[in-house]
Image 1 (cartoon, rainbow, N blue to C red):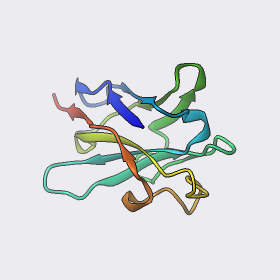
Image 2: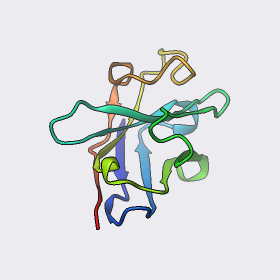
Image 3: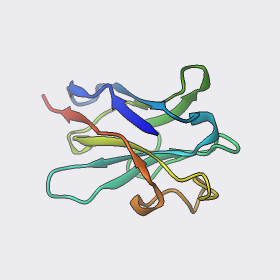
Length: 130
């Protein structure tokens, strides 16, 4: 099982980026997927997750209304569309998946913590700066 995050880069404040999380070795459509980020000197924090059962999307208040998670089953890829980016969004972004036996993988009260995930991608750097 491998996850690969991509799509990061340098963007100006108020700009947009779309991150991708591609999977190999398993089918993303059957798995909850989470996005996290980690800025230098800070703990890794949850950014979003998408449920495998009903496609429900969840976000913390810090990104709600600006970020959107989605799934393209045909491409076995999950995306994170990030709009209205702020300098405080700068971080390394990671996608992650839980073991199949963790249910629910993502819900209003699940899938928001680092220790609920078992497979991690390598991360992609997002820098928001003018």
